[in-house]
Length: 414
Image (cartoon, rainbow, N blue to C red):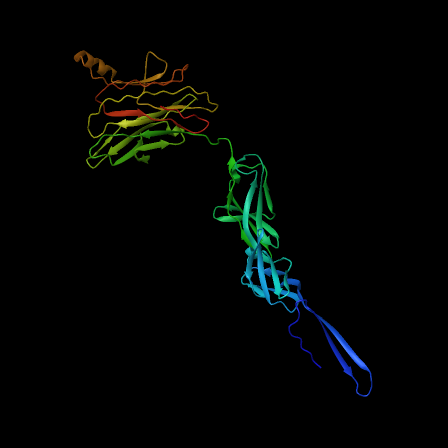
């Protein structure tokens, strides 16, 4: 015998009774059965596959519950910060090609005509290879030569990183230097100023960090001085090329309006001259020696030549070098014009056209003077003075330039 119950009361409770009587006896059998209706209970969220889910694969979330009558609707939520965001309204919720960004907490709600209930939160365990690999140093920033530094390799991975490998860039190759998460360098020197990177690996893959260069701070080394010579000329059309020569040599030593001697040696203590040319022709400046004495400083001077057969106006230059007490060998160098022994001093002085000037003074009241002097250093005073150039007629003009030095030398304006 089958019984169908319709329109169950709101209370959710009813009693069904069934009686049977035998015709040949007075025995009666009474059967009773209680039926109960209720809202969803024991709501559960599960995933397929369960456990770890490899990045890039798919996963299906399923919501189940115990309810009478069965749940008529389901709703899925994802936890973001402090809020639950609704993401689906079916019993199953699918995620294709999962990524670490899907490592959220999920839960579902089951509903029937008698009520609803939520599941507990579940979190997806997404497995992936190392990501966001980076290198940090301790101490950070500038590292003083002679101290120690520790490089640390960090990354995000699930499961965690199993091995680390360190590399140092040498030329065009990466040389493997270490196989732990931290790499330490003791008594660091400027030779360690390489680019470093690390590799993090787990069972699902590996990834590299960007290169990191150590900023090693150190005292001045290989300090040297330089002299820059400048060739100047007036021409129409303008000078197109400049060529530098060392006296006694036929081959040019440099091209361009300036010539720099970056590290002065004994071979550089010699006269230099320049040639300026345009499409009309060329002209040479008179040789100017680069002279070195003493142990204190290097002065750089430039050459200005009168070229192309034109007459120039008067130029004057004041050469001033302040006294410095340096702890190096401090060689003193300057650019000179020509040398002769002056009877009144114990140093070399340069004098051009002295006798010619005196003769012209006798002939003309308005004397045209051609007087150049470059006074050498006095033993008691480390000051050089160039006298005014008073002539209005000259073959070339020399101008002092800025002294170029490297630490610990100070830069001296000339």
